[in-house]
Structures are given as structure tokens and as C-alpha cells.
Image 1 (spheres, rainbow, N blue to C red):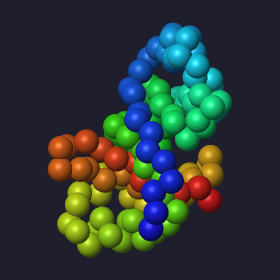
Image 2 (image 1 turned 60 degrees about the vertical axis):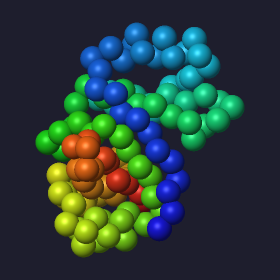
Image 3 (image 1 turned 135 degrees about the vertical axis):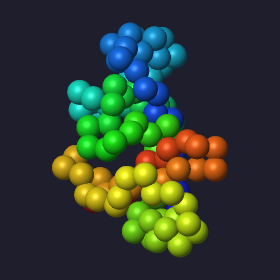
Length: 115
């Protein structure tokens, strides 16, 4: 299993203001589903930050997202370790397969792979 990218998720009700602020630093909108918006600079598209009001299909808003090349393997590793699974492994309509796990600091991590 390999990590493809790590994205901080900032809980926010100020998506428009965030887009404008981070735009001053060279970020552009690369995804917007209404409840989550992701920004990235064109010069480094994997350097991303997301802003979300609330997660649409999960009980909590994750603190960060980690994209891996094999989300099923990551799920089995986390389950086998005894880590708390906050949201079960499932396919989402926007083209990702994901689960949430709580890290030792109490942070919720969205582990995902694209379908």
C-alpha cells in the first residue's frame, strides 16, 4: 500500500472567503461538491487543502484525508491493529471508496482510494 497524497480538511462555513484568501497564495478550486471544496496550486496539484461544512455521508467531519493506492488493504491493516473505525468502508457516489479511522491523537482520518 502506498500513500498518494495527504490533504488537511478544514471545517468551515466560509468556502467563498477561503477560496479568495488562498487564491492570494496561488491556490485554485479543483473540486467543489457544495459541501466540500478543494483548492490546489496549478504548479503543485497534489498540494491540496479542503474546506467542508460537514461530511455529507458520514457522522463526523474528518480532520484530514489520506489517499492510498489500495484502500481495502489499508482498511484491513487498521481493523487488524484494533484502531477505532469511525465510519465503515464504503463506495461513495462521487467516485471514491473510503473509511474513517481515529488516530492516537483523537483526530479522524478519511482514508480513501479513487474508484
